[in-house]
Amino acid sequence: MPMSVFLQACRREPTSYTPIWIMRQAGRYQPEYRALREKVSFIELCKTPDLACEVTVRAVDQLGVDAGIIFADILLILEPLRIGFEFTDDHGPRIMDPIREAAQVDGIPERIDAAGSLSYVMDAIRTTLKELDVPLIGFAGAPFTLASYAIEGGGSKNYYEAKKLMLGDEGLWNAFMARLSNAIADYLIAQIDAGAQAVQLFDSWVGCLSPSDYRRYVLPHTKAIFDKLPKNTPAIHFGTGNPELYPAMKEAGGDVIGIDWRISIDEAWARLGDDVGVQGNMDPAALLASTEVMRARASEVLDSAAGRPGHIFNLGHGIMPQATPAQARALVDHVHEASQL
Ligand code: CP3
Image (tube, rainbow, N blue to C red; front, side, top):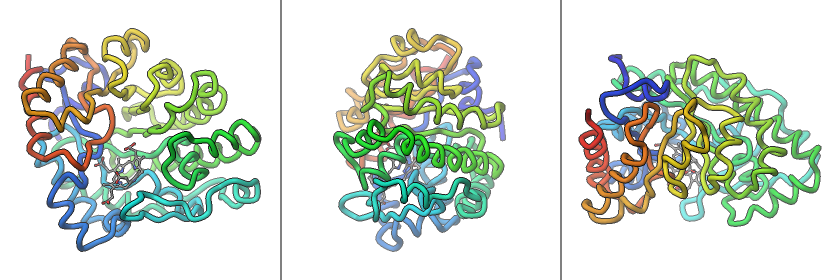
């Protein structure tokens, strides 16, 4: 593979333009994806390496982005952890038997064989690497986000059940988080062994916590994951909803902190310090505006980053199903052109 601007930016090396990829770049906003999903279920798609490869590569080719992300889902790891779930067509993921009690946590294995039990992800990575001429990102859900899914039973607005367990039984919480963290570390390492050139840890729902609760109940577990990862593979630590958490997230680990639009890039960097990269952070809703407005918003992000080494352009959260591939492509082209030295 030729020298990659994405990997250079992960290492905070200067690049000739700002690299960009888009969270959830393979998905329902693409007509080809929707057509494929008429024929196969989401889980079948994830578990068929040739199909996962096809959708991963299609997103890169259509958009002209500087990295691919392997097509999978953060919840797949729940299967070897023996936490049953399904993807429903209308209400998103559903956990069969939400975790509420000690006996359930006791039933979760302390270690998993990630390379074996999730071998279809490793196969998809190996297949995709042959087809891609940009780096491939592996990923996993962070322990808090996975725990809150498993406890709530699905998506949630307030995370009261998760917080009830977290605040009500710290020992049980830590036991659950430790099992998740062990599995997540093994899973990310297996993806790196399979060839992933960078990894991203998605803590999508962590923003519901205060900084002090984050430090007490989450940081040690997330840090344990980053501490185990090989140092030569860039790791991106992504969170949304609460910019107050970013300094603590940096302490937990990651070469790059993925941020959302609730703070500007320059302010986030001022809080984080310049010994870490920053990924983000256009509001995904800007893709739904006119191309002119969208480009102006993208330029604001670039201006805020001001060409500092270590900026990777992305949305502040995943692309919405209402976006169009043409508008996403226009964003990628604009970021490349406007940031060109
Ligand atoms: O980025 C990519 O292109 C790689 C694929 C990817 C998916 N999920 C595919 C997917 C990635 C990186 C994820 C991560 C993920 N999954 C997160 C973290 C990112 C975020 O958005 O916060 C979370 C919270 C999930 C859990 C999840 N999976 C939800 C909430 C849903 C349903 C809601 C939705 O957006 O559809 C899924 C299903 C899912 N994962 C789909 C895709 C393409 C849609 C499935 C379909 O109907 O085809």
